[in-house]
Image (cartoon, rainbow, N blue to C red; front, side, top):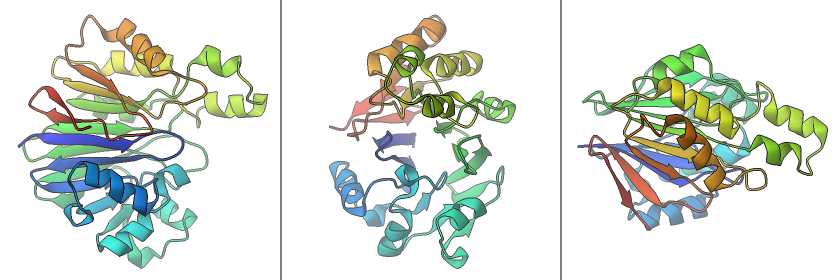
Length: 265
């Protein structure tokens, strides 16, 4: 069975994705309300009982908002690192604490490798998911630059979901105060379209089947700007599917290994 990646929504108002391998499903972040998350699961004909675990990448509310509440209501484990649990005031005994670069086995069919990435006052991680056939998928958001460690792990992935947060010209000419612009463009901020395209150019390989651009700023970016910037860099060597995850997902599921995109709405 293929490794499936579905974004329930992505952006500054909430982030959530599902990775599925042979009926083992892990939720990556839970940044919407429980009610909204359950509604979005329902659009995929999924129920909370179909989710086996929640992994929280970092403590910012658009990624963690209802994670503990969902974990308790749905009676499933919540995985995070110690810094995130502390920042959220979660009881450690309610969490399955992992260390960076420590493989987390959700089941015999699906494992997760947390890769540390730089972001504002957080111990943020990128997620590398692997199935029993060694298919690999990455979800990477909220970072100001790519580390060598991250690049190394992205190079073997068949699917990459990665943020393309802002267009530099729109940000710099927009209404944000200078201090916020510096934070967004700093090492602990977010990736610009140009940075994302440079990363994808570095890690693109013949077996990269699909790319999802996510966490786009509604004020400082536009889907066509992000996609065109990336395609200018990789169009000649990337033969797979490219899509945009919006705030109002889910819109599609990528099936890693099948080389196709299925619309869900």
